[in-house]
Length: 127
Image 1: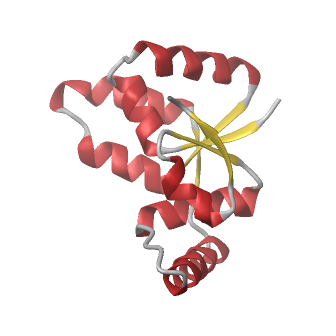
Image 2: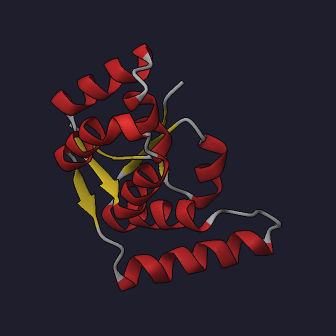
Image 3: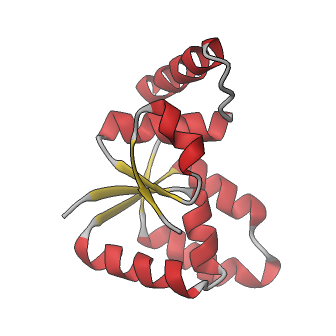
């Protein structure tokens, strides 16, 4: 059993019912502990289509949402700072998601490995 932090793009694929990600999400839900950051929750709701309201809220409410604590905020700021010194730009939401994964020792499930690899988090790629 693994503890997984789902990136926003994984939930978007699930909501748009792309067969491969839909099957993986169901499989992971049976065998692993699934979490999202409150940042992912916010990103999903910001991009939700009007006809997806019910299914989106059902999905979000079925997952454990992890809050942004002071420790996570501090860690995200440090990640952005350290990567910037190496010439790597990381978005604020991705930094918060990475910091959440690091703080809770979770594996990030994403389609955007390049976004998270420089942060040092464990990654499970969804293709």
